[in-house]
Amino acid sequence: MYTYETLLDHYYDEWERIDRCRSNEERRIATLTYADMIDFAHDKNPLHALIILVVNYNGQVCNGGHSQYVFNGYAHGVGGCFDDHPTTEMHDLMLSLFVQLGLTSDGRFIPVLSIMRMLKVDNETYCDYCDGDGYLDDDIDSERYGCCMCDSTGASDTPGIDEVLADKLDDVYYAINDQFMTDFKETINARLQQETS
Ligand SMILES: [Zn+2]
Image: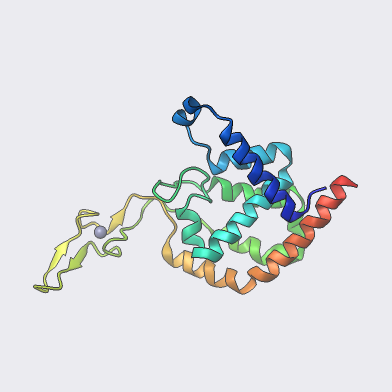
């Protein structure tokens, strides 16, 4: 029987094994993505996929906030921190699994679900380099010059989460996340036990 903790170890071991068994050709064509791993767990048991999604959500957000969660590709599911993440497919799957598995009727999860539902990525965001200003100050001759990263538009076509939204979600999440993770683990362990009895 799995518990919350042993289940994660099991899947991480499995993924390593699957990746090791791939041929060089397969590796050349495509790298395994977070979405592949979630699909793999989902095929075995949707509850298992939800656990992995929530643990990574919580881990990323506690480590570097909702912007890191999006930036590192966990909400989208494909690619890492140097790639574009135009969707929130894995994040949306996490939310729909809460519904599908009947966890939305548990009042303890309402606050965190409302935070999760507010997350979105925009396809046009502010240019990070000039903070959306389009111009930069030159410290030496105190002139302003156009930002070369965004052609002075102040906009970036890199999809991402609005930083103001990300900060807002971080603040509300950090106030409840310890309690949420305690409740979630308790619920999950009871479910896992039910499944095997
Ligand atoms: Zn710029």
